[in-house]
Image (cartoon, rainbow, N blue to C red; front, side, top):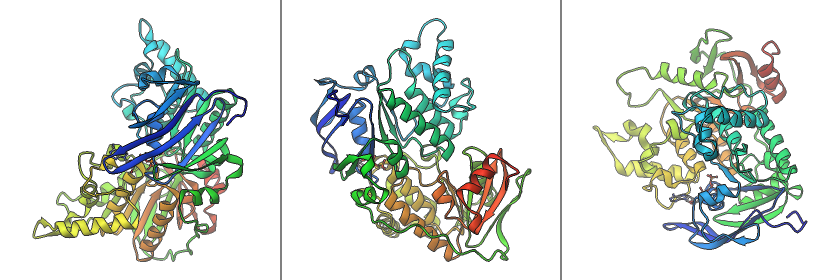
Length: 484
Ligand SMILES: Nc1ncnc2c1ncn2[C@@H]1O[C@H](COP(=O)(O)OP(=O)(O)OP(=O)(O)O)[C@@H](O)[C@H]1O
């Protein structure tokens, strides 16, 4: 609380929301004060996005009340929330892909209509992009579908902070940095601090705990639909947060021993410009550098080369964990079970017929192994929280027998406890001879790799191995091609 007697911008009291048997919110009370950044953390499926939907007016709680500036808001919905200056950036980005950035700004801000709207919309969105992400390089006449996932995330965040008639008062950011590299994330965090210092309010949800600890004033921990702890940010540590979330605190992930690089590479790709790409059996090869500098394109190319056969193989030669799950990861109309097993149907089939017993058993194993939080694997994939959907994609790739696994920033939105489990699985599988090619926007993950290629402007500009894989070296190579 600010302690200055001001009224909460929005206050939710005793909110309850259930989806069938799942209690997504089980009596949550939360107030957001002017001039504060409230950090919200919790395991995947804890209820963070659900409370955000209630505050944003997108979901009416089955029980409980909502107040704004001290008044009870009886008919609270999306329009009422927008009129009060509440803006939300969801985990699943929501811009229209077939429209330009300017046209999307027009869709969001109804006041921008009328003669000359294009010029006004351009001004509004560019001013905000410049303020939040100085030097962003995104032309506002580009079609959103042509932007990288990081650029889309930047546009969506800038739109939320933009002022086109209604001043933004409360910005809700649900995993805003999940696709941003460290330098873009830093720019956003600096902007949040400026916004809050000027009296604005922010709800900041992230699984990257140091971002929350350095940006929020107050941190609330959710677990299984309830608030289980709430303290000023200054008294929390990463360890106490992880413990409050109910995850097991593990020691720092250890760097793996240097690999014997004498083995012949199992994956080779010439990038045209820059250094060639090589990966050996049992190696974890990291792709680093600023977001959008060719890492995802390289993964796509590796995948296309290894899976070019027109006849599908019983065991795929290569598996892929998509980063943009809504665009090319999940099958939205399918169940969790089908989404998980789709890549291993050849393996699960006997004389061309899928053995449904084996399919269910394998899915159950993965549900336990990485804690996919659902009462029933036959439920639709969209009934899962974002982080749990990402776990399914991970399980889909790992449950194949593909000797090479490509991962396109696969931990987006996955909670701290599960990340540790997944790191361990990757290490175990690599020790048994599997090769991982891992693009990550998180430095902690890049530093777990045996060898790292740093990308800049579509080409590999540096190769780092063993003790040379450090944040300083990666940043130096990312910004200055000749540095490494
Ligand atoms: N539309 C829905 N249908 C069924 N269940 C749902 C639906 N939306 C959410 N849930 C369930 O409600 C619970 C809370 O989900 P929520 O998305 O709020 O979690 P979260 O804390 O935001 O997780 P994450 O960190 O993975 O984003 C989860 O168990 C989820 O499966």
